[in-house]
Amino acid sequence: MTSGTAPIGIDDIELATSHHVVKLDDFAEANGTDPAKFHLGLGQDEFSFPAPDEDVVTMAAAAAAPIIARSGTEGIRTLLFATESGIDQSKAAGMAVHSLLELPSQMRVVEVKEACYSATAALQAAVGIITRSPGQRVLVIASDVARYELDTPGEPTQGAGAVAMLVSANPKLLEIEPVSGLNSADVDDFWRPNDSTTAIVDGALSVTAYLDALTGAWTDLAAQGGPEMAEIDRVLYHQPFTKMAKKAQVHLAGLTGEDLDTEIVAGGSGAAGTDVSNVAAAGPRDTGLATSTLYNRRLGNSYTASLYAGLCSLLDHDEDLAGKRIGLFSYGSGSVGEFFTARVVPGYEQHSRRQAVTEALDARVPLSIDEYRALHAAELSSAEDVSTPKVTAGPFRFAGIKGRARLYERA
Ligand code: COA
Image 1: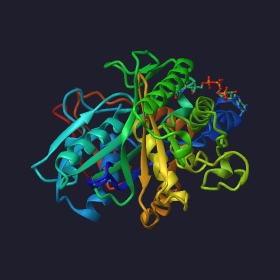
Image 2 (image 1 turned 120 degrees about the horizontal axis):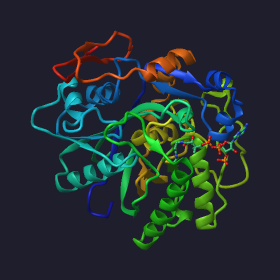
Image 3 (image 1 turned 90 degrees about the vertical axis):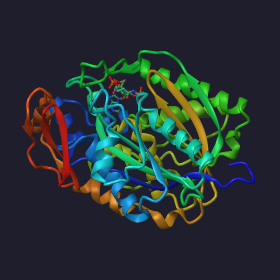
């Protein structure tokens, strides 16, 4: 932030995911596809898949609960819920989170939408609120279930996850800097009509639209007086699949003329962990591409949460971030791109989530491909009252539908 004002940014962050996982080795075998296409071609090893009693609300509440347990609700007067996969056309999904977490009544609760970008809009709005009222804190939650139709190219890039962030003055993790590069363009690369539970996507167009938005946002960052590439130590990207971050990095290297690392971790059934040992120690500048993609290649796409899951991965696997500047590129189809920067606060490493996230990823219950396809096809209509089976091992559950309203409870 500018001198004379307290820095504002991310004080606490947590990642949650779903009960189930689909292994892309199983998916490849069932589809007769070479597994290397997923591990190397897309940079994905697995994807999270929700149980029948999970959705964006239960994952969001699970992500936010430890933050509230640690720091209470004092000064939290705003909850911004960013999602592409909202559960209602009118009521904010955050209302159910507000209820599950027993947050104070004296709050505003709002849902924010623009495909995978909206969490960044929420984060910037949070910074704005705290700039005006430095004593306040804002709870920003990004939560999504990425769903494509069965037997389409997008299917192996599905996933599910939520990232909750507490935004405050004098944050413990990340100080967000004031300059942003922005780019908006009306493009039909990915969208989800009101009557569809799966996204419609023009995959090839979505890749070029993403890179065009990166060009526009980077160019605008420079025009707004933002830092040059040489002044940025690490770069994080929205990761619909981790190979997309590599494509973006190659593109940014071309835009800036810098020799940047372009290796993501070579995956496979045995590599679905946190091993970065196959990344060359010498060579192009290491901007964290390998370390920031470790969680996402196991989560799959988590739309709005994906960039911030990448942030968790970087913070949890890079021990040399104190005082370093990170560039973050957020992209949402449709489309909006934003490139902004932040400084890592010394002491960040004391708040590592690595063990908890790794345990949560390891604890997911694998689905056979038949089980996964049956769950994918099962869609609830709001027209009938229904109770969902108790499956999730998470702290909150979607209990069912009554009188066309969705019901949630502590598990
Ligand atoms: N071994 C290693 N790599 C392989 C392979 C194999 N056996 N078979 C294919 N590949 C590589 C391809 O060369 C290609 O690499 P490249 O992107 O570097 O050219 C990659 O795997 C993808 O394969 P391809 O056949 O080109 O595409 P696809 O039909 O699988 O579709 C997407 C890929 C991303 C378009 C599709 O997954 C999609 O629509 N995803 C959802 C939309 C999305 O996430 N968009 C991103 C921007 S928001």
